[in-house]
Image 1 (cartoon, protein in one colour):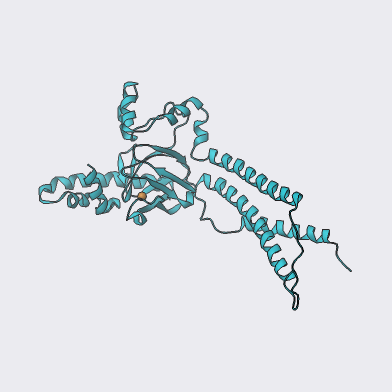
Image 2 (cartoon, rainbow, N blue to C red; image 1 turned 90 degrees about the vertical axis):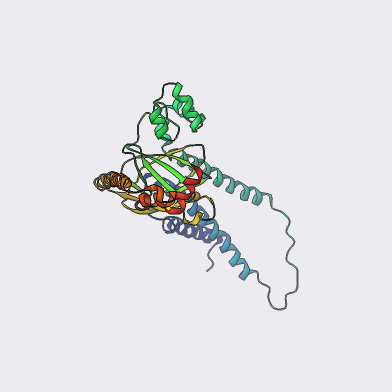
Length: 326
Ligand SMILES: [Cu+2]
């Protein structure tokens, strides 16, 4: 008995679809999801993985099948049949990828527009456009002073103030990227650290600049990557959802020690976060007291500063960089 080829095609199609769907969800390529946007990004990635698994299996399957089925038999020295063009086939293999690419681009734009807290600002489109068109430089801050924006807040936020934000984030953090470290400032308390601590489930708004060259803030577990640009403030929001220590990696080649430009993001319970913040406040006061007892004239600037910053996770090389820039 011979099974008709249409049945075979159907069966192979079902098996390929099931295998692709399974692998698209079980590839295990992504790190843990530690922010709200991680599920969105992974949904897109898994969809692309499903589609590409299907294509991979079809292409490789046909290839391997043909290698065996149409191999040269012993004693066969004839040419293959002369086949030239097949219009329906060419239309089909142009149309299918076009549909796939269009679908993925619409889907990925949808995901992109829900990331970085853009949907938060979308409630007030005027404010959004105004903020986007305004360069976040020190000059802009000076200009906006005359428009009655609180100058202290502007200075603290590295330059730019969002006009009439509909919904403030639960926590604000200012980030400075410089060769070769990340420096975090919590404007509410004035605490400055070399390690980023965040409370679980609270939306955080980041205002980020670079001191020298372009760096990029990247935390794979948050599925978040954003450039830090000199003279232009990057703003984004996210909500950490999973307790743990994650690596913050600079994802833009920024100089010879670029590979060492990484630190830890600690996501912890709000209670642990408040406790940590209090400790930082106490530590910063103690450091001030010690400073009175030190005679700075006997030390080089970086020696002097190392004493105050070693607990913040800031390396001596970084201090030298700041010193050169100041
Ligand atoms: Cu860098």
